[in-house]
Image (cartoon, rainbow, N blue to C red; front, side, top):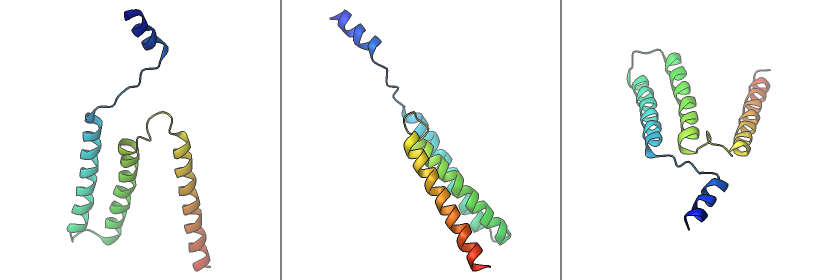
Length: 105
């Protein structure tokens, strides 16, 4: 039985199980970005344009953190969903640029 067990381990790829440490790190990073965005809006002394820039920056970082830590897009085997998401982002940005160009022409 011991030889059968070792043959199964050597022939099959080991699946690395991700512990809760990376989820805790992702949660803390998401929480920090949320607090920064909340603080930027709560502080009334900051320029409105700068507040918008901070909010958009924190939102973009939040998307990347959510995709990496919670949707596991950083793992192997997720190339097809990543290509689909990037294609969707490209289409949306193209449509927004076209709409802005059309409105201000």
